[in-house]
Image (cartoon, rainbow, N blue to C red):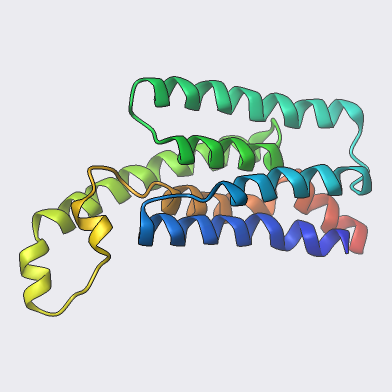
Length: 170
């Protein structure tokens, strides 16, 4: 059961956040709450030491502080900040978190360029029958959860929880 939660919860939440952000330009709070709640539930079964747990909490806190600063500068949305913080809790303070954050930055930049190009060519796309969500085309923001989700899926297999779950099943 522990391994199933580890293998399913974070990826499913990241995909759901990406989809809702793409379709509605919002990330539901329940996704972030589910991530935090599931982490709290599985931690006792993971064999994680108190020190390792502290590093997971420190990673989430550092990501939150950085995201809060970006939110205060109106560079990042609140939902994106909450999602990044909740996901960082699952990665912990280790190279997989760095991989996650770097991929989020790169994919977010590519996503921003793509969305701006789509918005600039909206009339041409509509002429050939391409249908995209209206919220994506008229909003002044970028559905950054798409980049967060993709980066999380790329980096998650190397995270400590996944590595521990694979080792415990062998």
